Amino acid sequence: MKGRGAIRRCSSSSLELKTKKKETEVCGLWSVPDDVFVHCMAPHLSRLDLVALSMVTRRYRFVAVLHELRALRSRRSRDLYMYVFMHTYPDPSPRWFVLHPVKRRLKPVNLNLYPAPATLAGSCFVKTAWGIYIIGGLMNGKPTSEVTFFDCTDHQVCSVAPMKIARSGASACLDRQKIYVFGGCWDDVAADSSNWVEVYDIETGTWELLSVFTPKMPLKIQQSVVIYQKYVYVVDEDGQLFNSSTSEWKFEANGTTESNLENRNDWLFADHTLFCRGTGGKILWRFPVDLDWNEVKGLEELQQQHSGFDIIKLCVYSSDSMAIFWEARPQGPDQILELWCAQISMTKHPQGGVLEIWGNIEWSAPVLSDSSYTGLNLLFAGSISV
Image (tube, rainbow, N blue to C red; front, side):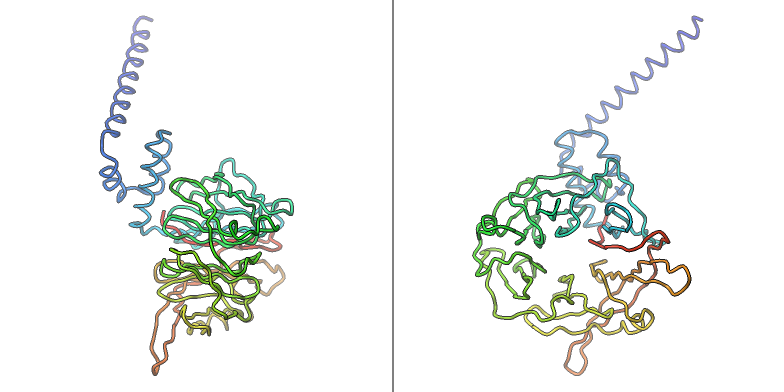
């Protein structure tokens, strides 16, 4: 009995020594300067490493260092993951999916204490270095100021500071660690020009109303895109085009109107070029100074293979490629709904003095299929290095 008691006491003492040693090692970690720690650790950390680090401590300083690690790693990482926010009916709420990079199948993201989104229509999405913001939208039929953030490194969703103005049907874009939200104001007070644009500082976590000049304050903004980090293009629901420099914030209408706007969605800017999705499986492009859209060549085989399909989402996949999503129902007795995805790299070719852009299909495959799905609404898609 004495021997057993001695063993227990020895084990207890050993455990105490090990605990103290770990505490000393952790304390030693914090003696390293932040910039040295970040630059030494970032190249060697995986997404799961960041998750583990986030569980070590809740000290404010570590939270700040963790953000720096994420930002630096996202710039160096080659691990691209495509995240999709989608409502699959008859499920009661939308949820997050992640595209497996090898199997190329969408897998539901399992989230602890995942809050059911209160907004379905009218929300806007902004992708950052390591997560996605969901901004505004409709709650019980009324616009809301609520904002949530989906962290792609540890797959957690949290509420962030709400906007000052409730908005639905707004558009938002990211420019140098600040999120700009345009329009979406629903009443005369909120639609005052001093409330039309709101900016969120990611580093401080605060919202600020931005005083701007605009000749028109449209309710719904169909598209907004940042050009060269110097200009913002905004297209309203009537197709009227406004532009402003990001230094003066004075929106001006250039007197032109986008025709057939309802069939030109998901504007994005890549390689000095504007892209959008058209009808019939087409991707369109033009330079910012031009008005006429051109068709991306080289997608005819895909369009013939899936006759009559329409792209439901166009997004950036990598630095030199894009991704498109579309629905398909294969012919047969089961009629299973499938969601397809294709990765397309873009190259520019001058042809007889005329520039053409050609798309090369890297791969295409059904990424989601389920006999229980009666329909789907793909709200957001974007790739993030995590």
